[in-house]
Length: 175
Image (cartoon, rainbow, N blue to C red; front, side, top):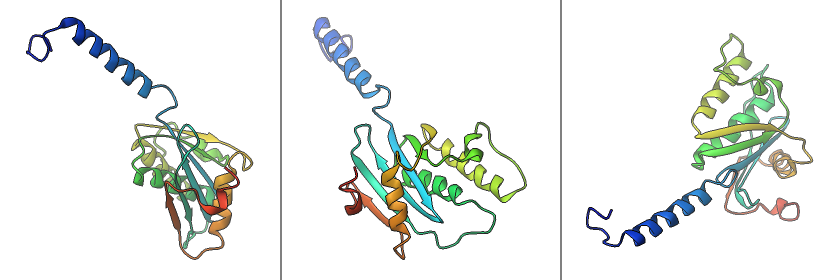
């Protein structure tokens, strides 16, 4: 910068560079850029709650699944909808917390297989690849209470609902 005529004081350039580095380091602290994507399912209805590292609600969704093919476990829907919702909201780094589900737990490489479940696993794997960083964590409904309540609410409505930067009324006393 000094040699291009932007600044003639090398000490000032150095201090500015140090300040920029500190700002960058603080924005890259582990966990601060991640969004927590909580998902849960009841029957075929899915609740999704996205929060920042401080617990602030960024988005929520109740998914009313109209079509449920035989032989496909509803947990597949929960994970697919949670990943698609996070992508639609343009989040690049997420931690998905959802119900324990062994097939999803084994997703290390691109799945391949002849079953319908394998096709859904492949869909989840493809969606995961679209994020800069994505990890899956399995939690109980007690820990994931907000998403569980949203899934329960989903069973009472006819269409899916979305909240953006707003805490759904049914969660205001829970979170």
